[in-house]
Length: 414
Image (cartoon, rainbow, N blue to C red; front, side):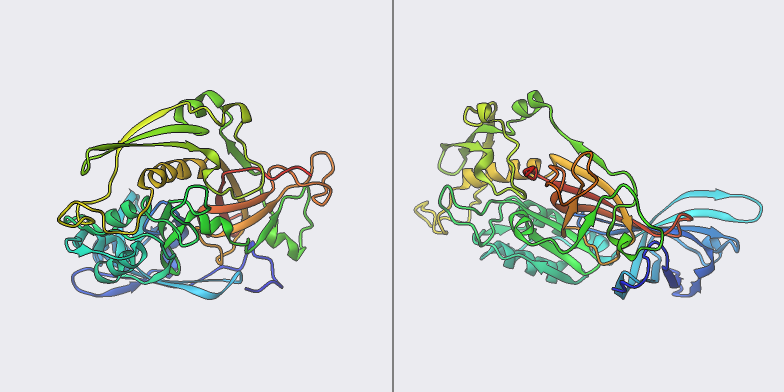
């Protein structure tokens, strides 16, 4: 990371090659790139890159370029020491326009893991910790590297049933409990994981552990900026857009504050009850937005079945796994995902390739009518998780990164 230069410019596309799917021939199309958009998302198991091409040589049919062709790209920017070097697969060609002198089209590219997810199936039995099962599935079924897998405190025995690897892992996200949690009501850890891909590889992360981590960077909203000030690298470039759900009727209907969960265990044929309250999971910031009046009385009844599996019991039907309150964690996971996206902040910052989806950053807003962020904590300030990001290379206005940030609570104004 070079902090002695402005990050709104300075990107370099060092190389860009496309390999034909059948012949293996390659062509350098570096001079025919219009611009590039790079995407990461915590609810998407695969990263994406859109490459917009101005093809003046008709290579789309001469090479030819087709879905399945390999793209090799090398990008550099002063915000990150290590360049982006990727071999990607063209998964779609869209926006194809032809005139007398050129062809314009967009290559949508993804990593090889997105394709191996469709060509491999999970069919064997897995047992042990959920984190270990996730790591094993990724190593055995997906072509790609693993970046980080948070440990889990609970175990799960299951069969793959010939499902796709990403589907199996996504289903395990709702069952996984971080190691900081316990099986006693009132303890901190709550169910709910995220499975996604970044520049560094695949991630299986606990929502609780993400929000417990310290922010890596801080971005500041200021009413004005000096043109050549290097601190602009960590200032919000445009007007932020905050999306919040203040509709209390909608929240009561969805059971956001409190819900009664009735689960039927298809193995034991017993019904389990759990009354969920919003305080059953840890908040990313200080202020709980739940109205005190509606915190205790549940506003929604949710009916469901317990997914305990059929391999966790001995011949007598006795559960032989570590005891856990399945109904509690199943209710927590549903509420946790909903609460995480209850506040969304969209901002644009100078390009920073070191940012990752799933990373926690701090955003600081000035107190109203003062312009000074040190007077009081603005309720909009605080800790956010990067849910989605987009780097755009080749924008005529400069190099920028778009961030979609999420959180589940406010910062206390004091």
